Length: 68
Image 1 (spheres, helix red, strand yellow):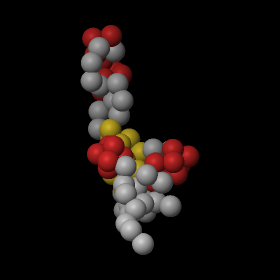
Image 2 (cartoon, rainbow, N blue to C red):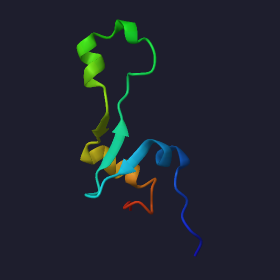
Image 3 (cartoon, rainbow, N blue to C red):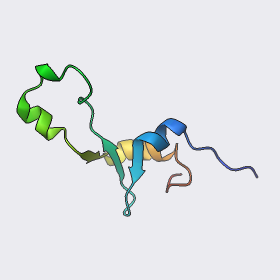
Image 4 (cartoon, rainbow, N blue to C red):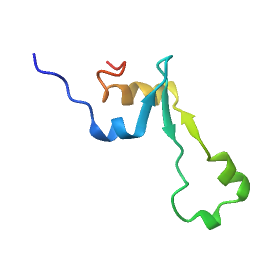
């Protein structure tokens, strides 16, 4: 049986924590930042943990990282 392939976009954008949750960077920090309030810019720092419903969908794309 051949190996299953991981979606290359998923492996670049998501990391799996020790508990099996998915970490990702936050959206909204690339361009048009002058229209954001300073509070919003501070809130968007760091990484976020995805919800369980989105995690199920993305883990299907990463078969060797705790998916399927």
